[in-house]
Every structure is written in structure tokens, then in C-alpha cells.
Length: 273
Image 1 (cartoon, helix red, strand yellow):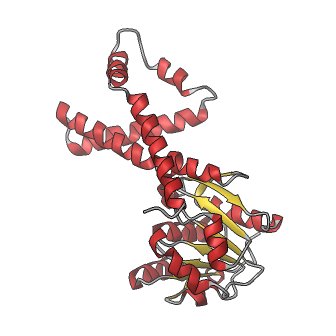
Image 2 (cartoon, rainbow, N blue to C red):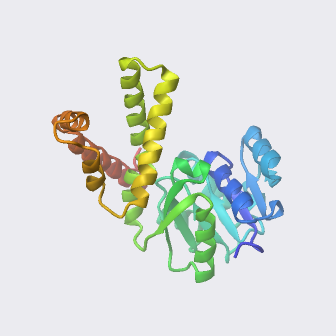
Image 3 (cartoon, rainbow, N blue to C red):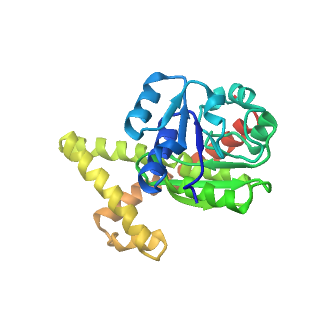
């Protein structure tokens, strides 16, 4: 479905490069189908050297002739990019955005374009293990939806939603979620070092434990509470540790953090700063 589709990437940062790499390595997209634009020479040098794609500093040149235009820029520069691209995107093209917090209405108004897909990926997408939630405007055709699915599939797993509001919710769960996990990693590593492990050993123990637990949970058709109970013996070490976490209001703090992230995402989408 992407074999004859030209894609223009506006922005070649970490997420844009991850998407380019996924398309080139796992979806058979040829380098000649891809053009990336960016202000930074080092980013263009990297994607050109690694994937052989065309590169340019000119956003309009990257969008010219593209059936799919991927917006992969920082939120703070998006307004200028939209002004620059307005009137320079093929009316029949699909615009796919991975810009955090940018609503469909913002992009539709800024570009004067209606066929838009908004996505919310996360940083594990850089290693093909991301979770991307996405939605589309009614003007996106079935063929374009299939193209969008193939593109976000290059980043890992995906979930399509009809209601854009779910993207703000997903921002607080899967979008910001890696930060919560990394903080837990950091705390566990520090605790292991405090007990006497070297930092390298602590890192290996913690990362593999979290990785293995995630894979195990994915493969078990039961609620995580059941998995937790399987490793929690009455009066045992896990029970004592969990008791301390509950005393510290772990669940409440996590819930408050997620709700705060959601509210912040909504605020940013409304133009807050």
C-alpha cells in the first residue's frame, strides 16, 4: 500500500527519523520515495547517510509531490511551519502529524487542508516498540487510512480511535508513560545501589526485570492484579514492599500524575503555554 507513495517528512528529529527507519527497514519503502526536511544539517546528514533518503532545508520542497506529508516538528515551531506550507501541499495529499498537542483543527486551519491524521506516538517508537494512538478526519479516504496505518505501524503497535479526545488521554498514558517507567527504573536502580550492587549490575537487574514483566503481562490473559498476586506470598518480601508502596499512596499519586498530564495536554491543545 506504500509501494507507490511518496512521503515528505517535515522534520527529521528522533521521531521522524524513527519513522523513516521503520518504513525503510520493515515496510519496504524505497529511499527514493522519501524526502526529509530539517533546519539542522546534522539531522539531514544522519537520515541521508543511514537510509539514503533525499534531504533538504526547504519544507516546501519536501512536501512537493508527496502523497503523504508527515509533520514531525516541535510544537513551538509548528505555527510557522503551517504558514510556510499553506497552499503548497497537494489538495489530494494526506497530512499525518506526530506533533504533540497539535489538534486537528489547528492543522486544518493553518494549512487550509482537511485530510488529516493526528497521532500520539511515544519514545519507544525509536526502537520499533512504540504505542501510537491515532485518529482521522472524515475527509481521509479508506486508502489513506490504510497508508496511515502502515506508517504508524513502522513505529510499533497502534490503536485507532474515532474521537480525537482520546489522544489527550493517550498522551497522559502511553505518551508520557515512558517517563513514569524511567522514573521507576531510576528509583529501583538507586535502591539497588544503596543495598550494595554496582550501578552497572543494578541497571541490568532493573531493566531486565521491567522488560520481562512487560512481556510476561502481554502474554498472560489475566488482570495485572492476578500477576502481582502470583509473586506476593503472605508475609513475604513482596508483600512487605507492596505494603510500603500502598502506605505511600502509590496508586493515588500515579492517578493524580496521569490526570495532571491529561489536563496539561488539553491546555496545550487550546494554545496554553
